[in-house]
Length: 376
Ligand SMILES: NC(=O)c1ccc[n+]([C@@H]2O[C@H](COP(=O)([O-])OP(=O)(O)OC[C@H]3O[C@@H](n4cnc5c(N)ncnc54)[C@H](OP(=O)(O)O)[C@@H]3O)[C@@H](O)[C@H]2O)c1
Image 1: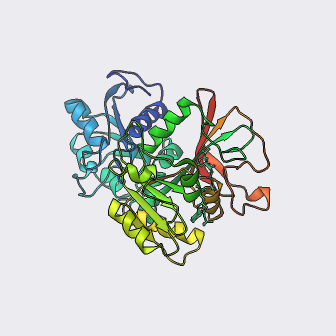
Image 2: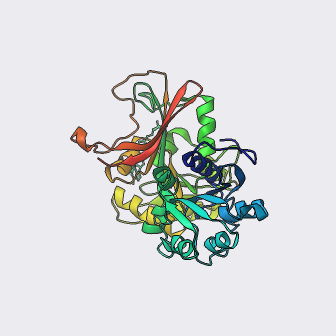
Image 3: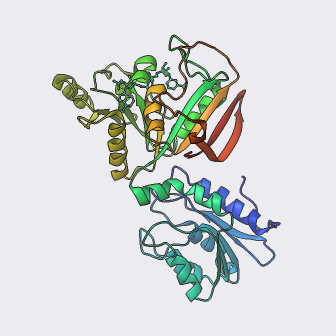
């Protein structure tokens, strides 16, 4: 949604909060590991006074941007904020105090902050100061927006996105393994935008062997994601691969579950590749340990761009949080042509995973279906 001019009259409270949510989304990729937040100040007739969003990690929060843009006009205003104002000193002073000092009368909050040291505390502080506070306006959208932050905060693990491009008849490659290109240019540009707001991009040894991908965001986005190869023993990655040749653009991690050849490992490490070895783990154990490690590094968003092998491990172990499936109007057939997800799969349809917070968008001729995974 475009930025609205001061004085714009909103028709309802829901419309104001939807605008605040759209502002919050502008922070995606810039604010992590903080949550994206948007704030809007309106007068009694719901006319826009000022707005703001959390623009970058370590910088002022959304409420503070809106309040300072409003100046004296914040007195007596209503604040719509997608997430509960904080009540603690972090990188910046508590926003709840700034809201009180500004003379705001009424606060509409999208959802509570899941951080144990905040949850409910910001609301309480506002109520104690005599402000009228309501929680839950556009609550499910507000919750969905901070779901990755919530997951990292509560489980110390990143939010796992998976992306694939498939034909209308459900294949991600032909029977010979050829997959360039199933989706069109517009879709591929969207994938690069998605990559540019991730902390890590993950692929499997099969995709490395078939496609020799770079897995960089082109053009670059707000973040430079680390590129991670999941392999059995590391023998699939060589110094000649595009990932290694582009090490000056973004780091590379090789994740193995069997001891790699010493000479090979040293050569990769000397070239700048980090090797993470989870020796003796199963396929799913290897991914669990990798996600734990990425969580320890405060990574919020991981994107998997792999073939059916790695996707199968992820779905069988219920490790996927969000799907981005591009569907191209092409048909290639072939019993041996690969589907997006392999692994063991499910025995019964009622157990199927489905999508919530679904969106359907067109990119050229392709359709992108995205959503959060709801386990059956
Ligand atoms: N259209 C698209 O969106 C798209 C995207 C990516 C790839 N592709 C296509 O997919 C094909 C490759 O598919 P793929 O299934 O071979 O590749 P993959 O999923 O990228 O990699 C699977 C390989 O990774 C290894 N691996 C190591 N640890 C693993 C773990 N923990 N879990 C799962 N696998 C692990 C497996 O070997 P071990 O058996 O030794 O574990 C297996 O050889 C290519 O044709 C490529 O072009 C298409």
